[in-house]
Image (cartoon, rainbow, N blue to C red):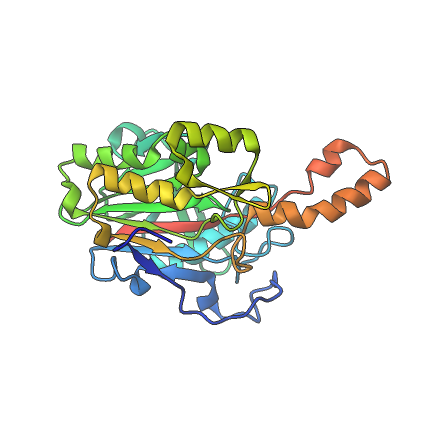
Length: 321
């Protein structure tokens, strides 16, 4: 359970587990949004908007069906562009999308003239009347932004999508916080970027979106022992001889250490590995194991076996009002 006084939120959608269609013709367009700032107890009345997407109502085909937002997968780039443009045109019209090449680091990229002016930009008009202007800031796993005309995008498929917002100065940091990032304190780096901009910790609000939780995040014994040694035993739970990591507790404790008020921290109580409406690398791995057995029985190459673990990415879109 999260520490006392932390705001926890469950999605209001009651959709049961379902097969995911890669055609958006029969889907309600609202299903492309899994959660948003309008549903948030902490961010609803702030000067910021965010959308956490689902995997529904896009145009990508299996195994990326259907709202895949990641170019670095083997999906058709045109499908990814369409999916990004759909969200941007619907929820953040007339704004430019900014993103980074996520590398499981603790690097925060500031969207200022020093890198935005030099960044790779593209603009496309699509046949379905959507348009997309986007900018790749380079390698990193966090984006610091103070510009209202920009929308930051963080991509995940089990890692934690995190938003830190300074509600006084109108600045935010969006983070891709996987195990590597959490263990190298990307959250603290993001908070420090806001503090350097004049923020005070009592004015910071934090949102942690859907991600793999300790119910599903099994790790090896060596890694479990190392995390217990470096961070403490409470972050590892042992069940039936297996070890499970609690990244949410690590993030919440880090919020405490830097002085974030617990009532200003919101955690979406959804495990991406358990939720069929979200992409999950761990779930894709589990689902591919029987296919691997088939391949081994046919003596197919190991490289072909590795290619089976493919999945899309859902995203956290964030923009100042």
